Length: 222
Length: 104
Image 1 (tube, rainbow over the protein chains, first blue to last red):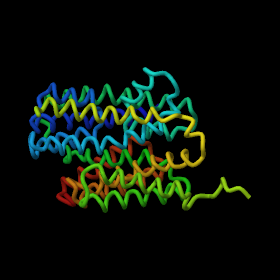
Image 2: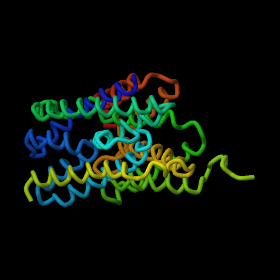
Image 3: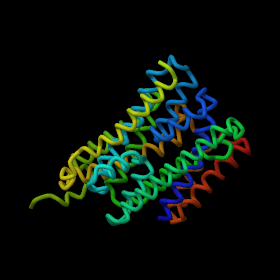
Image 4: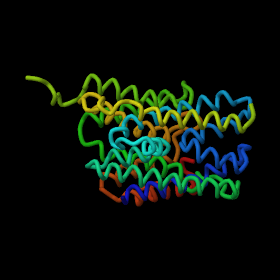
């Protein structure tokens, strides 16, 4: 619960910078709000306004591709969350809507099914409410906030992801995957379109996971 | 294409991507290999997000004040310092370094 709420608050603070940057990119307040309500995926939203800021409507195909590529990891998350959420059509649609980095991450580090569910809903709904309110506030504030980097908020965002992966690094195999994924994502970044580094890192997990490389071979039949 | 069309189309694609994963039958995950892979996927995606948010800016490798901030966060997480305290420490570290004109 505590990690869920602190993640929600930390991420929501970032919504102010999204709202401000969105208006600076040329979107109006309503368009900014629709993005936060409907798309609701920070990376995809930042990618979209970043491309609109640089190329206007001529960058529209690139903006759609970049936000879709960055959003594709949410499919991996929803596959991961599916058995945890359980049955019920409307519940699954609602869960899908708030399936993002943070809600999945907080949920999957919990020890049992009940706290996994609680962690998912508290984080997801908390961020949904917080993110939409703060991106609206940011859009209204416009550029008054200035450069978020001077407050170190970009470093805090990276530290948040680090804190989420940390509890999972207790065996050799996940540590190998984490290091390899981080290196691959960073190294390929200058050479591929936005979003692809994250997908490349997922391929690392697939290869190591399917072959059970560095695993303990605990399922081996003697 | 208007700006509104762009926003609606891109948003719907991202939303459908999220919903798609819930269509895969849950029974698939009762096997050991998919469960192991999906656990490792979480580790890989989060680690990639750490790396991308720490050493890249606008698709370039950029080493700046974020790197010492993340190194500090590593030490603090290893010492079991609470999550939100580590986040504040990392932000302060980067902000102070930039204020001092170090590592921009």
